[in-house]
Image (cartoon, rainbow, N blue to C red):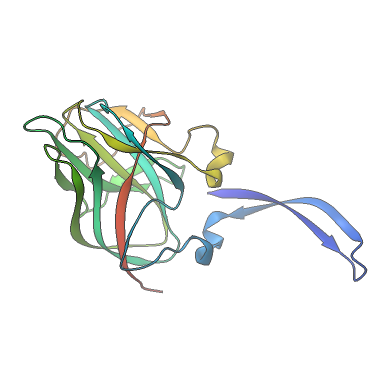
Length: 204
């Protein structure tokens, strides 16, 4: 994934020598900037959260929002927050997918799929033990009850070069076990969901 920066260079008298040079840079070149604290629950470092509920989130859609792992890391927890419960039997599934190299979810990471009880509200976080290499990943969710309330997230400035809403994907998918390969044909949307994950340690 690339971002573009306008740089200016000056001589010793602060006179501009070259102006407005556009430099293509890979966002993974900024590991310190995008590193997150270890041992605490954090949100995606590529989206921003709104502290408002998203009421009656439509069911039977698989939604994916991005996360960036700037250095190889061990994840010790993953989950989602249910703002308001659905009905009896309300349930969801979450998981983490790799990226296909073109900013689209690809393969389900083993050990990340979790079943979420959505018949009660609260933080639905669970322990996992998964090592992720440096790169972009996708946190995905699907549920079976359209009366569930979640927290909504939106695209932030990091992804501006991919176009409006191009950082969140949605595709129709009947609730059940997550597919090993993310379905093709998803559409860009602003229907991002707040996930939480916990980084135990960075490994390099």
